[in-house]
Length: 322
Image 1: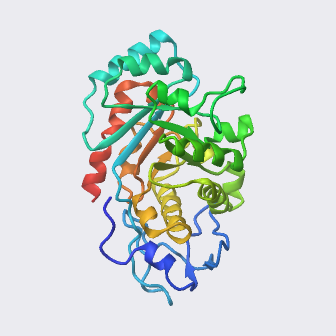
Image 2: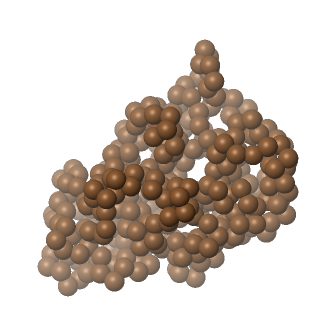
Image 3: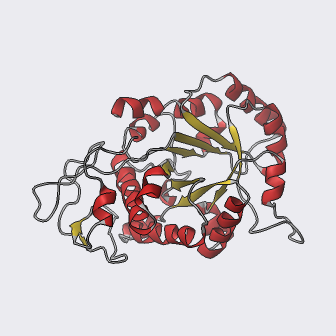
């Protein structure tokens, strides 16, 4: 997960605005964002592997290695609208008895109703996240939860921009950005979710969608110091379909490149980019081997203590890959 010692994608993106080739995998079409020019007729990646090297044989391309994140592995469990007092007690018992690798930040996000129960009985090894928050200080906002209330219960993180909030509840980019900005202003970390619908991937708009969602966060955030980006292709959430390690890596690498081009190379290096979308105990090790995958945001598998622990411990695959 350390920054590659050779030339990085970040240095290429932040250099002169020359054309370079970008991936044209199934369902991915780079758009002409900012002043970066993309060619879809050439292959950006040759022999996609854990380092995703650029081909040195293409005219005008240098042999470089994509930049990997320098942050600590991060695994979050999003329990969504699931659980009862009894089932959560069992899950907490399983998590408390699990042996977790030490060099991983582990977070779980219970439903609001059970945050206090989880906080009071879960090991301090695992931090607590909320699944949503309001855009500002509490008040006459029926049904909402303020960041101040979350902090009062011991929450250190909040998940924002999840596709279920975007596409079922109807939250737009600007609204999500306001939430994120306020949470960060109150020293609550943000797990910022981005990802495309199936029809958007099939139309070749994966990068367009992800970059626009990133821009909405970037336009609002006061700082990236306490932000984790979760790439969750909507077509893979709760469907059992999973992006291949190569599909996930290509988007993660592009996201890191966007951060370098539009925020800074330092932010691109430090910001953790985690994968979500039917991540489970069977596929996490292969995904974790990819250089720009810095962890996971887990849905259904996070409701099973032993399986969630195995996903946390997939960091060992990252160490082997490194």
